[in-house]
Length: 102
Image 1 (spheres, rainbow, N blue to C red):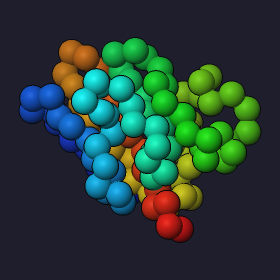
Image 2: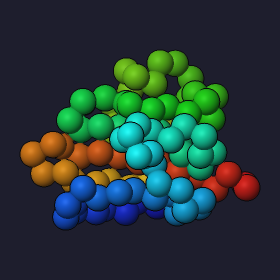
Image 3: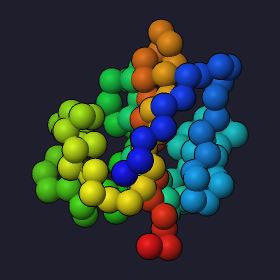
Image 4: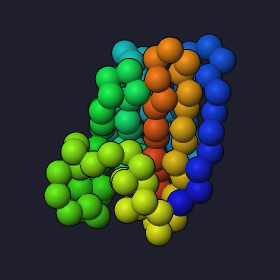
């Protein structure tokens, strides 16, 4: 898993490095039909706002209760990309992607 750190400039939109799809739709909701998206963690909400079925199958137990650092350690062997987006006072958001063709 490679990690990319991004400092938000103004309403940073995050796109999958594998499909090119934006994580959020026009309504601001998570686009759940992108097979490359594993999870989204919202710093402002202090929790996971999206967990894919793929990730649920990879991790034993309740993902909602896993600390972000622990989750990253558990998936570090997976080939993919973790984006850490610092939203300033809104906290840090995490977006995790895998290549849906692998």
